[in-house]
Amino acid sequence: MKKIVIAVVAAVLSAAGIALAAPSGADCGGGGNGGWTPWGGGSYCDGDPYPDGSYDHCVSVTVLGFGGTNCQRIYPPAPPP
Image (cartoon, rainbow, N blue to C red):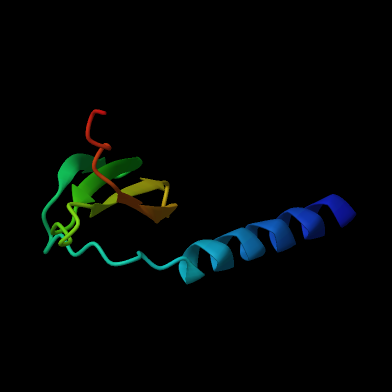
């Protein structure tokens, strides 16, 4: 019984962490690339470029209704010396 309670608590905490993790700012307007099935899927998108040439790259993954989104700011490579 203890193992079941621990598993349920872990699942709830994990789902709460996913729900609280909001995307950082890339607005793809419903666009992006990827595919979805009833069992899961994923997509990615790139936000509009900032003045310095960087942009937000977001990846979303869902498996059996659970998942999340991770966004990172991508910077252009440094110019050659």
